[in-house]
Every structure is written in structure tokens, then in C-alpha cells.
Length: 214
Image (cartoon, rainbow, N blue to C red; front, side, top):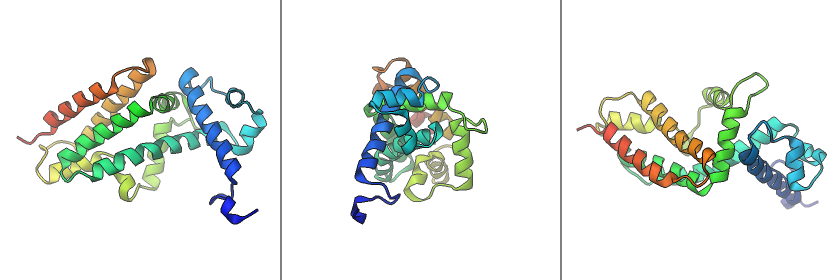
């Protein structure tokens, strides 16, 4: 087999395609029935393969979840990072952060609902929720470069530092904007046709008014 047929993990093109197919099926099933009900067997049935084939590519449901989260997070970052980087002011970056995140939710509704179901239903073998496990991972290995822009705290820190924003708590505002955007996801989980774009524009106005220095 030629080396160019293998990726960095030594997988062939066919293996990569099968993994992608399994991840897509898992996302769709989790969004449809919830994380606890989306068993490896049901995912295999959705793809039309044996359960053993899924377990060949993903040794456990946890490893499949890791692949799902990585795919969704990476896809979101590809939308958000350029939008935020294109703005020169903290206010512009905050607006871009909200709008680009909302745009991703709008264009990846099923993915967003699947992530919501994982966040509310997944537990690691140590009993941690996904957000808790992610926080531990970030603490151990803080994101660098462009990926750090996915954490909005630095936007609030920048705005306070340069006087664009009033004297506010960057940590509390980071929590507020994340909770507000997550609220759109919970609405999508209830109604896949929910108008997330209109919701996002209201968030832009809310946080513009709430952070303004004068």
C-alpha cells in the first residue's frame, strides 16, 4: 500500500470514509433520539453495518463521542475564527463572535442538537459531564493561537483594557454570553425550525448595550 493512501494515523481512504460515515450517522441519531438511547448497535443499524465494524473504528462509545465533539468544534472554529480575526475592535470582535457562532448553529442545526444532547447526557467513566471534562483539558493544555479566540473571555478583557467596555467582569460576561448562545441550542433541541438568527441579533444588541462604556 502506498504511503500517500494513508493519513497521519495510518488509515486508508476507505477507513477514513467509513469513520466519517459512522460519525455522521451517530450525530443524526443522537440528535433524533438523545445521547443515552443512541447505542453503538443502533448507530451500526443506521449505517447498515455490523456493530463490530463500529467498534473496529471506535473502541468505545466514548471514543466515538470524542470524534463527534472534535468534528463539530473544528467545524465551528473554521466559521468563527476568521470572522473574529477580521474585526479590529473589541466591540466588533464580540459582535462577530456572537453572529458567527449563531451562523454556525443555523447552518448545522442537527450537529448543534447532537452536541446539546451529548452535553446533557454524556458522562465520562469518572462521572464528569462533557463541559467539566473539557474544562479540565483546557486547564491542562490551554488553547493557543487562533483557537484561543473561541473563548470569549479575552474579548471582554481587551474591551475593558482599551476602554471600549465599561468596568465589567470578563469572566462573568464570558459565562453570560456562552449561556445565552447555549439557550439558542436548547431551543433548537425543542424546535429544529427555531429562528436562531433573529435570536442572535437580539443577543448582539443586548451585549452591545450591556458592555458599552458610555
